[in-house]
Length: 592
Image 1 (cartoon, helix red, strand yellow):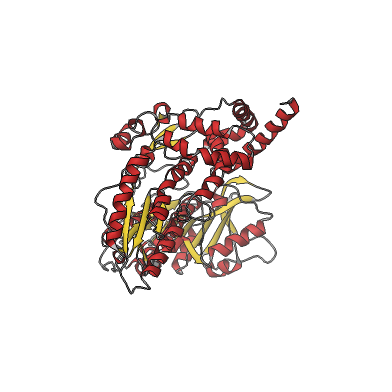
Image 2 (image 1 turned 120 degrees about the vertical axis):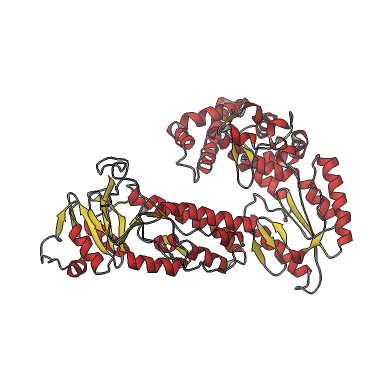
């Protein structure tokens, strides 16, 4: 091959590697390994191109850690450079593997997934039962320790035809077969570095450790190539069930598969055939004790309990989502100030009780919003009332988030302003945004060393004269006691907008950091949301009402007794509180 041809081949390979790097960094650009790769991306891409062209590329030792959800298992994370090569390989090989797979295989395929598999299974149950007029039986099976039981020599034989066809169709500018062979010949469990505590690794059973499977056996969980290779490994099972056994109602998601039929005896014979085929042909074993059951009793598949007429969500999934939302809401709980106590906010002044002081952190609100967004999986089942009760059970959702046109948006918090990333063309635009998000609350805005009222309506409520052509009335920072007391006396809430680090343009970055509300209105709102009373006998940080019994009952509707009180944590003493000028916190508590 001429030097010009080699250069053109390398340029084409660099172009495809750069595209694979963009796909690999999608939604992971803030991770340290992605940042390090981008700092010297050109050098890394040239090095990968040289090694792929020379056929000397081999995976580098990666990392292995233990995940505890839904159970303890090892997850192997490859280096970022190797993940770029994985995306490059899948860009050429995955379309050919996808073309050969059965239409009833839903794992890791474009346009398919867990929700599509669930809907297809329910539709098949409904049609096969003639809209509930006859019995349908379901055979649910799954493979024991699937990824760690794959024989890589057998897998290499299954990949021969897809690799040859992919080379003929896409003409990759590197040795595709050699790169796949390098991945299959690698032993990641023997070279990976452990991250995490030793106690977590000891909790992983011996049969679920990749290092205990022997040489040439098992695929690492966590790699993109492992998912496509595992799909290709079970393609003979799809052919057996659909062609040899003649079952058209067959659905598979990775190593979990369901076969439907109206004759339980036929399903029992199919079970024996499938078990023997997997053991003799692929070296895989299925979990014992799996027999055909009525579909009307529900089939646990892809995180749902699927029945012919409707779909339910796993109780474990609901409990995990509720616990995640409650955990994110803990940092947004209010500080309760009783009638005989006083709280000092650094830079604002004194807040006399009774009052509730809510800290507003844009990043915490964004985390709460993301946690609630994880409940979207539940919405695919018959869980409309379940989601409504979950929303009402956590008062932080109703306080800091709002539902509008099917989307959940924050009310007072601004995550971009919190991180110093919001650009304001003028102070007027910034003030209008703060006024719009403060709602009916009196808005105080920090402007340098002073604090100003944002609108004339707030000045009239506080009986403060509003100059006709001059700036808004202001006070020296740290001396807003009179304004806070006047607003709370009239039963109004007060939103405090402070200057934040980071300036984009000529306007200082500002965001609403505190919301001060009268304790009476807060208690009424709290009781309306949760049915519980807010105990204000002691000062401190209130926590959201616990709903453990509600979760243990499986989400059944039950109103919290009115006498149930919210736990109150006693605050730290004045000597233990950080001073207002330190960087350890934006506020300090001092009770008289």
